[in-house]
Length: 83
Image (tube, helix red, strand yellow):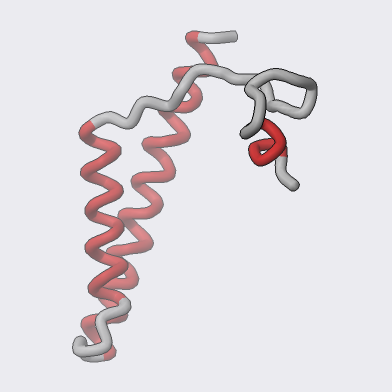
């Protein structure tokens, strides 16, 4: 059973992880998520050629990396604001 599952019945107790500030996704984050999702869809489209899927896989990797960098930057700014 995970900590989250133990917290479901009661939001108090030692099994519950400490709550911190929530991660607020910006429109830019959502744009990056959509770009990664669309590229992944293209990369897994079985009606596409192998070359098209390969190119889309590269697009997906780049989009996922941009999203990861943006999320890490956002989390770091939250940590700085809430030491």
